[in-house]
Length: 249
Image 1 (cartoon, one colour):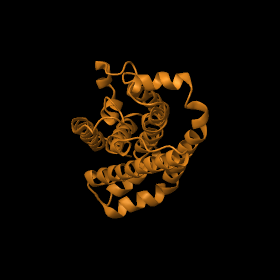
Image 2: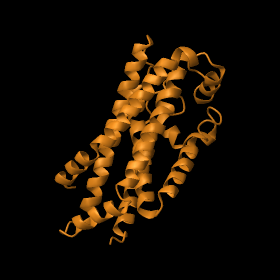
Image 3: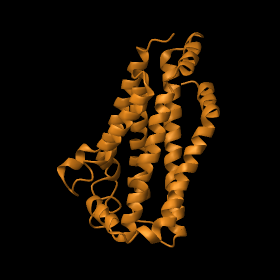
Image 4: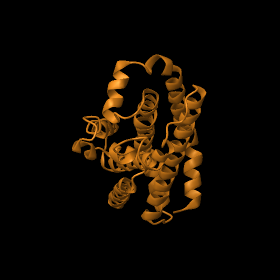
C-alpha cells in the first residue's frame, strides 16, 4: 500500500464521504423525531417480532431503525457505490493506468484503494453508532444493551458490500447493472433474516452474521464474525484477481 496514494484518495473523496455521514446522522435524527409517532405502531411490533420476539417495544424500535435498517442500507449503499466508483469510469481507469505507468505494481494500487474503502466503511459505521446513541439518549431512552456489540459485525457487513461493489465495478460495464445488482443483494440481505425468528433460513442472510440470532440480547458471536471476516477476505481476493486481469487503455 502507498501512503501518498491513500492520502490522495481521502482528499479527493472527503466531500462525498462527509455527505454520506450527514445523511446517516440525518436518518438517526429522523428516527428520533418519529419515535413518538412510530414506536406504538402495529407494523413496528410485527417487524420486531420477526427480528427478535424477546425485545421490548423501545429497544425493538431502535434495533429496526438503526442497526437493522439504517446502517446496512445507508452504510451499505455508500460502500457498494464507492467501491464500484474506485475502479469504474473512463477518468478513473485513465488515472489508474497513469499510476501503473510509473511503474507501480498493480497490487499496491489495488490494496491502497481497498485500504481507503475499509477505513471509510469503518469511520462511517462509527459515525452511525455514535449518532444513533446520541439520538436515543436525546429522546430520553436508555441505550439498548448490547448495541455497541453489533459494531464489529456491522462494519464487516458494510465492508463486504463495498467489496461486492468493487468486484461488480471492475467486471460490469454499466452503472445500471451495478444498481440492479445492489438491489438484488439488499433483498438477499434482508429477506431470509426476516422470514421467521430462529428459522434455519436466517443463516442464508449476511445480516444474520452481523446481528446474530437474537440481536441486542445475546453476546457477540465470534463464529459469526469469523464467517463475515472470511467472506471479506474472499471478496478482497476476488476483487484483486479481477483487477489483475482488468485491461486498461
